[in-house]
Image: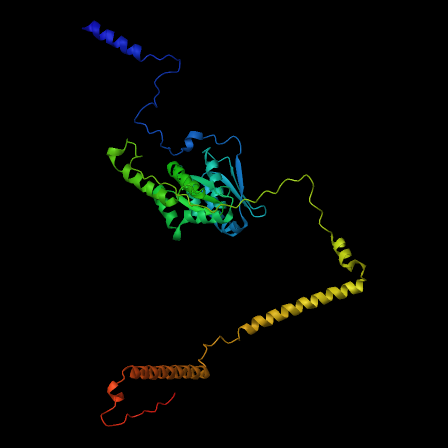
Length: 381
């Protein structure tokens, strides 16, 4: 029994044997330690201070000069706590930060550099000072060179902001970052994860890959899925919406017809002197040239005056009235109707006479006994 235990221990030792000299178990290789946690800096870790002076400077636009002048005491006080010297140069238009003998944290100078960058990009001083905290990071996204057309760039930047900054507020809530759109840059402050999401949304919007509203929908669904512990270690692609980009048909640009190639150059256009020689103006005296120019000028002025007068008088021209019926025409129409009625009556009379001739009574023509036949005189019509 003891022999079997000793053999098992030997086998375990052989399994845990490391090849290299330094391949030994480390004290920090422990699952209980959170490697992503940023511990707060303790000045006792660097009691000697900095050996060299490090400094950063950045320019700021002229419209920020007044605000920076008012807010600089607040910024200087915040940096002084960490032993960082700050300077505002209004002549050159730049801000400078540098380490001193009192500086202990070696990374604070990088934070101070981010602070002056944010201030130059119109971030308010109280918000920008938060970058000095270890948990807060920043990212300045350049969007000016992503689109060439100025009008298209302004339109897409407005898509990012949204009506009454609603899209921007939704992004701030979902990513947990502070976002400010200013000119050709977007300044963002927050955690690394949030900054990564913000950069992706901003670049997709400006490059017209995806509208920010669709990104917001995706982020909302991801937040819901993250709250469910059953789906924590699963792939979320089947739950997330897939948006297809609809290509709008654009008008085809008509290509210019290529002219047939000729090795000879085109004829040289006539110069001003050639035209004057053709018209005979070249041989006129200076006085006559001046008189001719003056005459042309007067003619142009007269044309312009007449045109302006016509435009002014056009406002006073009365509109066309509806045409009234001419009484003479109406009487003619009445006469025509009367004539038509008379002709119809005449035709009816003639038709009646014809009928009467057809219906003749023969007894009237037979002579009665002992009486002479009566002779009727016909009236020749």
